[in-house]
Length: 371
Image (tube, rainbow, N blue to C red; front, side):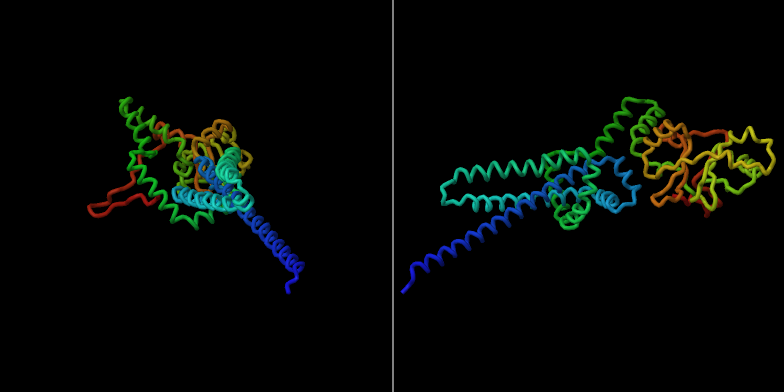
């Protein structure tokens, strides 16, 4: 014969176990939803941070050796696929948040309680509010205030997302471009540039003025590396040279400013200006000319010439040594090189006309081998 007291005790224990299991399941589900919301926050913020970086920011990052900064520049080399990958990840995470949040609300407010209206309102308004706040508003505010820091912090996560979803991302972007093209839309920057060039040609009839205006437009996007005099063309002064040989070398080269190096051009220790030598021309051959050296100014090859021009103006200098990401000498750049990008080549009495190729005979030519 069954014991009613024992049956009641067993039933009560079973109910307790179910309640504990239900609470644990609800807690785990809530933790998963919270984790997904955090991911959504970081992904949305990373998208804003990465794609709000300017050309100047990207070129500045290329000068840094830290792995996080390099990761950012590498990812931005394929911005179309990167954007698609982030969008795919964001969509999948938001779908998961909506589904799991529905289940979570059903567990907190079971259907048998008769709170269908409350459950419905929670599902519509609460989920929408949380997704908009955490997945859109807050990350955009944070990224807008410090996009470089956010991009750095999220770079590893973004790299993982890129490699996981790059194929889906590329397909998504291709599909969106086809739809946009079908709808007659166009956001091409090249088209805008063509419009500007056409406007210049139609309104300005002087060829010289057209060239100057076109140079001004392109000026802000040109880096030092594109205009510098490469290392192969750099003439330097050895630090150990005598004063007599120094005067002779400057007279031969016809340059007003020359870099001074010790072991090689990677070890530039100063810059000598020819006008600084004029008061000392009558000094003996063993004169210590190194005391006349000026401190060299170094710039990275990825710096924009617009910024370089401002630095030349601020520091009142005309000459800079260009270095690469490893600190080695890439070449030199002068104020004249920068100005020539706007008004064209400036020639003085010492410049010679040079041709990129030379005909030797009917079957042989010499061509410029530098790039």
